Length: 180
Image (cartoon, rainbow, N blue to C red; front, side, top):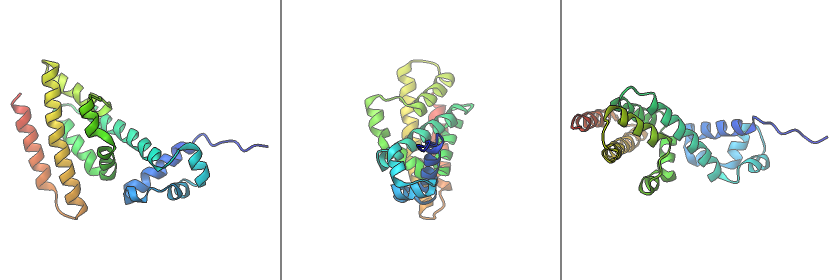
């Protein structure tokens, strides 16, 4: 009798991948380590994901959606900025993975993923006006938030205090929003 595939195995694999990534960084995500953590075999893992990159792209897709949900749940643009930075602080390895997996090229090509659309919606609610001005504000805020998130993560990975970076980012965000 043929073995029945576990329909929950893909979720278990992604959970194991995320756990390895969160605890030890992307260097810990190997096909063998993920298979072991998920309680499956490496060949079974390869049946569902072509390679390590496919696993990391799946984690990226989930992280983009979670970040978008954080931004959407904000009651203001300033709160959306705080939530963005908090996401990066709570999930530094996922955040770094998101940045490495093409957001910079996506922005240049006009890609509008879930986090971009959520932020755009927040800006549209708080700052009605011309769409070009809203997108300009969004990109300015994104540059500010990404720069601060990257500096904060680097400081915290070295064991340094990042509170000055966080406070400076919030102050710059407040100033930028007050000019609108």
